[in-house]
Image (cartoon, rainbow, N blue to C red; front, side, top):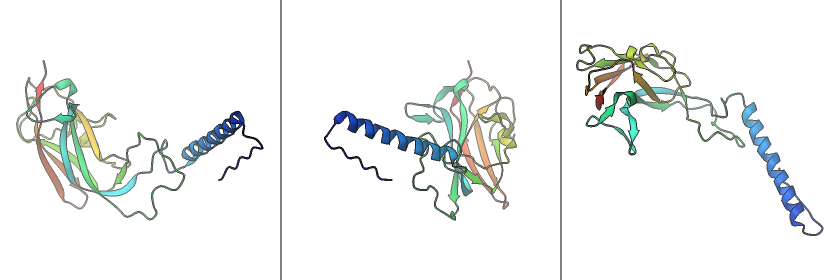
Length: 202
């Protein structure tokens, strides 16, 4: 769309008024196109089809001083979160993702449909909070949506990042030593060991 504005004599007020009107009109067009686009949720791109390949990393909140907590740190248990990131491989799309004229919110995070995951487990490698080595604690890891990691079966429209709060209180200055299992539908499994920071409970 091309806007042509002609003035017999240059009038700053009329010129700026016309330009402002044009910009306002274009802004409305962009906003409406985002709202009416059916395959996008709240102005964000549709999830991409992909396969989970492995566990890329296990990492721990809180995030302070521009880094996540390591096994040598001591953190307040109230701030502790058990997080992991999946490594994925995107499938070839039938068509290109975004179309000309589409605009997405800056806060959008790309999500994926990961149909090859069976389930995820987190096993203790050392006793913790009165639980013996070998215990599957994925039922104690609660996502921000209130779901247990052990109950996750639908991995559609998800991020590659998973965060969870530990729903059990350990003894003071305990460390959580775990082996995270990613079970795939083809029968294979991927694992990653990790050690949390020291957890200060009082």
